[in-house]
Amino acid sequence: MKTQDQIYDIAIIGSGAAGMMAALRGVLNNDKVLMLGGSPKDKKRSRAQWVSRVENMPGYTIYKKGIQDPNKETLSFIQSSPFSENLTFHKNVGAEDISKEEDGLFTVKASDGEVFKSRFVVLATGVMDTQPEIEGSIRTIFPYANVQTVDYCIRCDGHHVLGKETAIIGHNESAAWIAILLHERYAPPHITVLTDGKNPEYSDKVKELLELYKIEVKTGGLDGVRGDKKSGKLEGFVMCDGTIHPVDFAFISLGMIVYNKLAENLKAETDERGFVTTDAKGQSTIEGLYVAGDLRANTKKQIYTAWDTAVDALDDINAKLRSYKREELLRIKKENV
Ligand SMILES: Cc1cc2nc3c(=O)[nH]c(=O)nc-3n(C[C@H](O)[C@H](O)[C@H](O)COP(=O)(O)OP(=O)(O)OC[C@H]3O[C@@H](n4cnc5c(N)ncnc54)[C@H](O)[C@@H]3O)c2cc1C
Image (cartoon, rainbow, N blue to C red; front, side):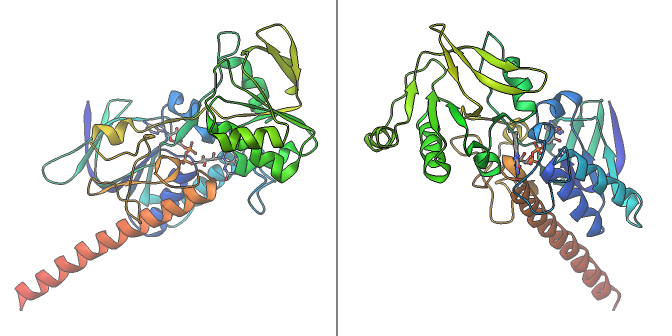
């Protein structure tokens, strides 16, 4: 284990939508920033890796990979700017543990064995959508998720259901509400809820609306996917009784895996779903530990909210750093009078 001598102002954990915006803001604020981008495993299981064309943000349809491509541009801007020395980026390195020492500094243990010290930490490790297990594997759905004939985010891609035979895969009431919302907004030819083999418990209101909108709920379970794996064209789901349920498009609504391990190690407060609770600027219940992006409780789980929460956090940290330096200068001035 090698501990670095340098004390960074801010350690940013994660380099997705929130992490990169945090790095940009920190660098332009003229603070010394360390960013750990995540180990190859961290990256593979991040939403940043999955996002392809972004259609709900002005000017973004030019990118094939809506987070990775603009992030590369931002990184090369930083690295060729007069502020380049403000950023130390460890691209394929994850944070394995973080502790807060008695002197108030954070110690970040990295996956490559290095140990870093910082005054503030910004956690931007995100979440991942729970995948359905079909044919004994979560990988069965990947060829379709890759080209977004299977989707996860209603606010980003809900409009894709227009004119399509649509299925919602999920057994909670929220899956039924997604079906109801999509029917009311886009009225696709059919919407069916496929409960992934589980029996849902719906409220009377939901039952009434499902009936009103003729939204069928099939509880038999999924046994396969029909479609062209190469192009990602979805044709339907093979049900456990052997029948085929034809669809053009599906949403997965099975909940989220929240990457909150580092926050929990530090004993930061989380809500009932595991998201880290913060004040309005993004500081958690641990002083100096900030959270940005999807990991933060009560946010929209979008790229633009990841950006906004990152900017709020970095500006608040910068205000604290400046205030500390200002008070020090005033103290020294007083002593020298
Ligand atoms: C299929 C799909 C499509 C979407 N489309 C859109 C869209 O069109 N528009 C929109 O606004 N939003 C979209 N979203 C939502 C968007 O992806 C998220 O809101 C956004 O990525 C959140 O940013 P984040 O930085 O919190 O997390 P992420 O972008 O997922 O980044 C997490 C980062 O943390 C890193 N990491 C994890 N663990 C560690 C660790 N221990 N140490 C170091 N690093 C770590 C990962 O490597 C990654 O860099 C979509 C989501 C999905 C799943």
